[in-house]
Image (tube, rainbow, N blue to C red; front, side, top):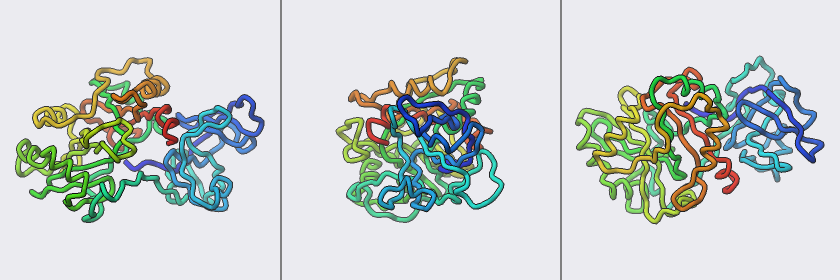
Length: 339
């Protein structure tokens, strides 16, 4: 499911900020953010822009876009108040009848910020990422807090895995042909391509062909990490891939976490680190899961990016209109690296 970078939401609460006369702390979905004091009342609709949204320089956003440059929405603090997201009046949109939760990303001209991978790591592009390979981008729990109730209601176990701060990679076999993609592109195999070099060093193609039937069309998705990628915040000395998804291409359905574990164990590859397995306690809330993310560290002692939460067995989410899978990103990580 593509993220709603800009959507119609409701201001659920407004609270004063110590020492600030012109701004308030607003509650939108599961987020807290700073708004102008006179701009909203509780119950008002707004256009909410998520973290990593790129807001274009328009007359309605000129006060946000310094020097006429588009604004990337990040985690910031204003008067010591954490602010995650931007809320603007609904009047910035063309006239119309907008409903709560409606996606207005296109109407607002918003795009998503993507980390730039150095050319020396990326290599040559074969083409765009095939449409039958879904992007790996779990929604943040604060944007879909009701998804937590679905996790709590499960009869089976939930798994929480460490989100590595790297670059998305997919290895696939389709109609007998093996290929590799980055987040957005299918890549040619060249000597300077870190994706292909790592795939070859780990012998991924042969391990997939040995494990799966020749007639199966399979995609294996993970996070490429190592020197030169996203600042290598985990401090790794070598390239590696931490795998987290196994997809049946024919049915467009993900296999269970258990099925992925079985393949990874058999193939002696690296699975994403599991830090929680079981039923979530009934008292679990968004703040308690964020606390877990904030306390999580990589092996070098630096803040980890966060945690991905999903059922052991694949489950459809009525809230997300897709697979039940969400992430909690560490605020400590976001503030440390100005994300």
